[in-house]
Image (cartoon, rainbow, N blue to C red; front, side, top):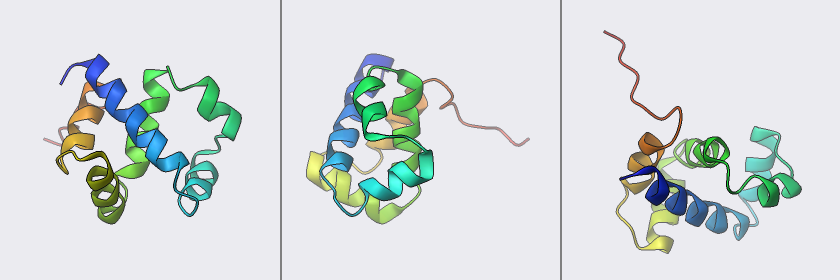
Length: 92
């Protein structure tokens, strides 16, 4: 997946998140982002990476979002890897 594809997937996740009345406040609280930030930073790859990081904190969120988007469950992980700061960390 290239960066542009990853950005589009992350925007899809953000759209799902905005439509989730239960989870959106959790995201805003956890990240310190505001609703205005969601509008203003949607084109920033680093911000989109944080959206994917948040989603991937919980397998149930990943599954619900991916089911909604009709994509494979590993799609958010692949998208995250293609965005700034998303490369796998090697502990060896």
